[in-house]
Image (cartoon, rainbow, N blue to C red; front, side, top):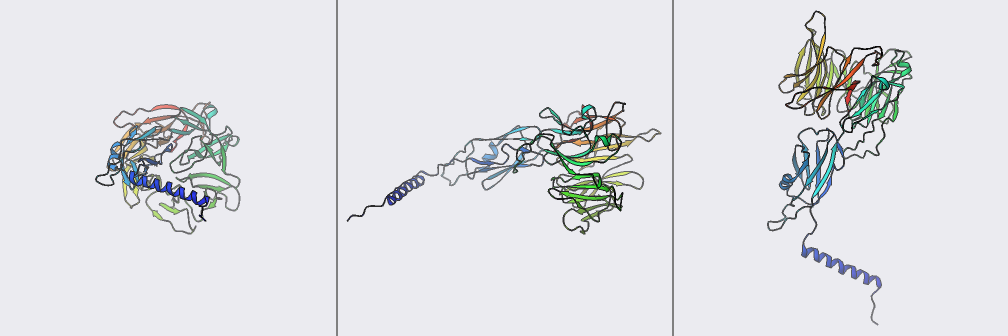
Length: 484
């Protein structure tokens, strides 16, 4: 009897025949896949000054010289190209300007030749988009319904928002690294109006959408969502600092009651954990280092660098005996500006690097209030004072830059005879933001940590290369800070 094939056998044979035909067609006809960009890691993302390179991943090895020649960014964004395997990196050589949308295009590019006689294929045209973060700043209001409240002004979107409720008087604040939240200390208005200072720590959302590369930020939150971080029941909060990566807060507190009233102590509050006492740590002014894991604090006749992770009995990482205060850090932690108080009652500004180099940049009889590294770490933007020539001792503030290579000081702007000034540099280095207190009137309402009554104007000084710099007023407020 003749054997008849099983139905499953007929299906299997049919599939094998079809696959054999397809394989033969591919072998005889060659590879018909089109070269293309498989992934662009900045696609539809918002990038900040810390984002310095984007990556294009291809499905084939490309003719990289052709890619470099035909890669265009609109508007132009200077950078340099490097590649490895099927990945191309474009590294920015200038700070990315904020408040700008960019388009990346790649056309008429061929794959790498597989053999001398092979005809390379032209890649599928590519177009991608990304944008930099909005140009936005936050300040403490001084007039009317804004008085004592955190105010957000988004210059890119031309939007202004009051972030904190009317029953809280804000005294200090620090933005989180993506600008979507702000950490602040505030006292209830009923207590502040009586001249007392007893704040709690809170966070508030700004309403800005943080969508950085390689990170899922989740849904956008509306502005003004308040969350209490630290109460004031047993301790009074004196000062705080926020780590550069937002991972921890260091707080200076003093107990309200108990066996050691008035004894100042330092505590750290890591994200998602309970507050921890930094034992055996005593000192004055402090700042969290850019690595977010160490603390620089004034101790005795110098500055100590202490670990924030590990054993509480760890020895200081370093001690710098001749400096009295750290003013700022470079964003990559490679250098810091430090203040030295000289025996002749002058003050010196030093640049201190991680390699141990200490360079005196400035010596003055006035004050060195602020010193901020520019985004390219070539210039230092400073708020300084000079002593007036009259019989009465008066310090007159001014804004200046110091070239870190030559130590040359260039004055940018003379300020009115008012020392109560704060200054902030835009993340992209495009402008300085500062306030200027003006003569108080009975109806004005600047409320600071001492509940003093005053008012203040806000100013922006554009920093344009080769052009004149004229500041312009942007309203009233104090302590303005750009969002990162």
